[in-house]
Image 1 (cartoon, rainbow, N blue to C red):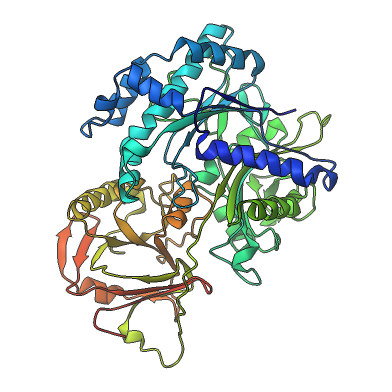
Image 2 (cartoon, rainbow, N blue to C red):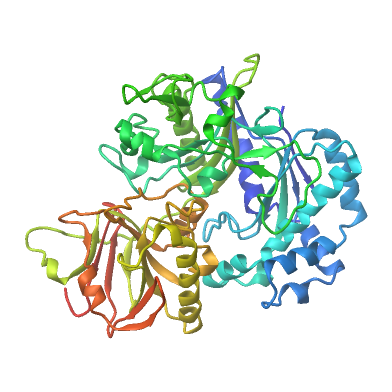
Length: 568
């Protein structure tokens, strides 16, 4: 049975509150009566209240040091690691480790995180601990290090930029910490669940018969970092699990299916934690884990001879993550179960919601599968409505951008600046350099308090640099509207279900995806190239207009229209 415990005083923070609330909802609605063959649960969780954060920062004289903006994340992390956690908390943590013998996730749970008015996601750090060392003293030391680094992440560069852009003050932020058992099995030094996912009760990119209210689910084999990091995942609506546009042909499945997964490396009981929170993870290829036996219900095989996808596992070809056993053959009722959980969460919170979850099949098939809800948070789209009419009377010459895949509601005013990656300068192998150039442009515009439109190919904020431009929030913190474009040889599907994407929705940033070569949905590159360039780097340009653009988002139809200055 899972447990929920609070140690130390004051607030649970946003994530902590969400987890506690989800536990109460599961008790109230008793979903296991409807799904008796599934263990629906929230993993055992301990929350350290925000009081300890104040105490740690104060006792170790870190506040003045932490507020210095000239320090790197590495220098901040080092200073926090040198700080001392009080003996009382250490005693509490030692008792926690007597109960928790399996790997642990140490997560942030700040006051501002996951609030309904301005929810954050993925801004602060999460550390995965093997928790496997023979010495209890070493295990305790590793846990304390992870807690200190979560505290330090409040003051990291990206966190500061995010807080600044939401008009929040860093002095207002306080951090609780969640210690949660990792869901998964151990396969010879690799711990991971069968698959993980993010589900949202509101779908900003419905296709076919889908509606916005049908919701969207993103799933991937292994740990959830693949999903929240914006890498290759499978997306489906729980109301229409059979509609998967990016998996509609063998060629598309080969192109879009997940090739690697994240696992927790438990083979090394000694490791060094730092400001980067993936030091305990590994990323093997899908084919490398065939022997673990975890792919039976989620993978298919590509038959090279017949150029077909076989809905079963074999050694005849490469494994492809298709979730066919789950979505096509109902080996696990993922779609209806997620739909039910989103429904009770939405009713309970009174607004659209998002959950992170992990599903684990027992490797010896002696226990029923587990569906573990790791997090619950609000997903709050704006409800202001602005209708866009597009018909034969529309003068296309006046239009800069038009798309039917957009996120946002209402009118965005006073935007005269455009930061963009011209198609002719885009190089898929240089996306890290492009992100750095955008960061430089952002810094200049932020200093002058000038909001801007950001335009570029592929997925913004992806952790896979071959799928788009891997910008961090600190590099685009002044953005007001983001545009993802497709190019002839770079047609990447829009990203959704990621922490990055969640922050776009929660902050009310306009988000537009423009397809390649569509008659009605386009971007006028020729007009943009004629505008005044005020700054130009190797890959990125900054254009400044004499008058603001007219920017409209229609939240009901999911469309966006940007009209050139002086036009209507």
